[in-house]
Amino acid sequence: MTTGPSPSPRNITSVDLGDADLNARISSGMADVEALLESTLTRGEPFIVEKVAHLAKAGGKRFRPMMALLASQYGTAPGCERVVKAAVIVEVVHLATLYHDDVMDEADKRRGVESANSRWGNSVAILAGDILLAHASRLMSQLDTRTVGHFADTFEELVTGQMRETVGESAGLSAVEHYMQVIREKTGVLIASAGYLGALHGGADEEIVDALYHLGGVIGVIFQIVDDMIDIFSATDDSGKTPGTDLREGVFTLPVLYALEEEGEVGDELRALLTGPLTDDAEVDRALELLRRSTGRACTMQVVQGLLDEAESYISRLPAGPATDALRALSKYTIHRVG
Image 1 (cartoon, rainbow, N blue to C red):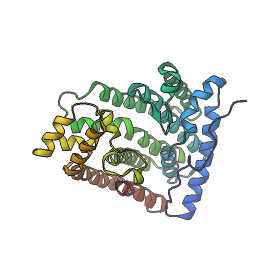
Image 2 (cartoon, helix red, strand yellow):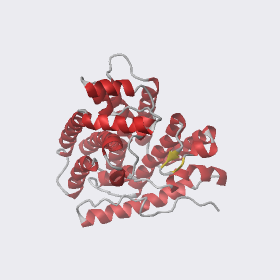
Image 3 (tube, rainbow, N blue to C red):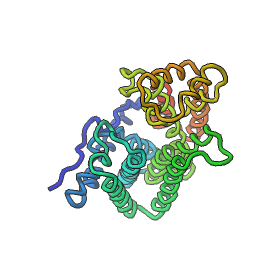
Image 4 (cartoon, one colour):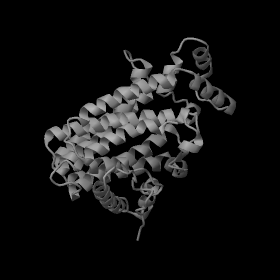
């Protein structure tokens, strides 16, 4: 008999949503999600289960399932079995993209453990991601063709974002515009799907489904930008991450791109320093010092504030209540994550 990821507190998002009843409903729904996720990932031969359950066992915030459960609160059947299946679909597709991303990025670690490609090789990691997509497709078939069609569009957008990132900037897009488009397609789209499918299968009105789809996409973009800022501006003790990881990998995120556009001594030195991945600790430290002196943080915070205003425009289309208060608080919480 095979074993898979067990429900545990670190797997289930423990954000206080500001309302005791809502907290209880979401917590109960997340337990249902974790149970279905476990049964989904333990399907198949033991040698397959070991691989596909690898990253799920390592943990994860499960933010996407939580978004789906929150979105379902606007319908006539919040947290129902169909919603739980939709939430698991989004999480399983997310897991599949992590396996494939790690192969493309040649990553050694993911969620604090050895990446699948590092442990078993690229071929096995790619096939594990493919099996996860098969599991997600099976769950979609148990819902409806609208869900299948939606995920065809979603996955096309995910792959477009990955390919856009891989081939680099295209004609007509600045470096900043390219970055924003990539994170909309790679990160925003799955959180948008969580909002869409949670509301749809929870029985919400079409206008609400549309608002939550767009809201999820904006929240996803905000979260990605803030994560990128944490890599530069937050202390390890606060974030639990080693600053400068993106710089070591040659990844230039939004604060870096703005800083590289800066005129003057700071911009000049950064442009000379950031010609590719940084392998020397002293160079990483110097780059981080320059970035903290640059206008990169201020320019990026302006972008985040604009996205928060956009998020509020979608939140204003939702009826007042604990779920709406929670979504507003979640979108604003992101800014406070940066030290």
